[in-house]
Length: 85
Image 1 (cartoon, helix red, strand yellow):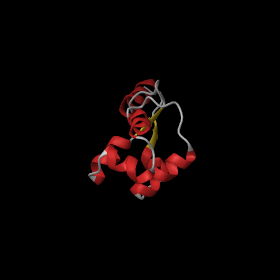
Image 2 (cartoon, helix red, strand yellow; image 1 turned 180 degrees about the horizontal axis):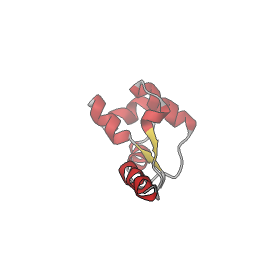
Image 3 (tube, rainbow, N blue to C red; image 1 turned 90 degrees about the horizontal axis):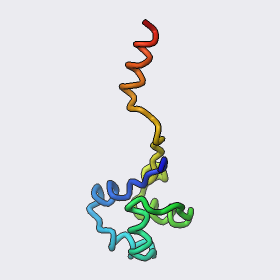
Image 4 (cartoon, rainbow, N blue to C red; image 1 turned 90 degrees about the vertical axis):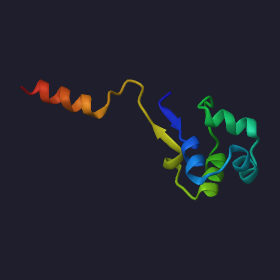
């Protein structure tokens, strides 16, 4: 999937458990776990807002766009150098 959830990173940085976050934002542990593991297909804005409030962060700190077909930046730069020679 091109959108990944960085919930694990935020939990680790804030030294918070998934259970504690679930209690703080009023979401079931099961639903939060689905989001954390990347199995969720959608997220409500109200859920994203609650997570951002709990972590005092921006939505971009929770979600990341990673194109499935993208090559690492270094490879693209090397390909451009090779093509210009």
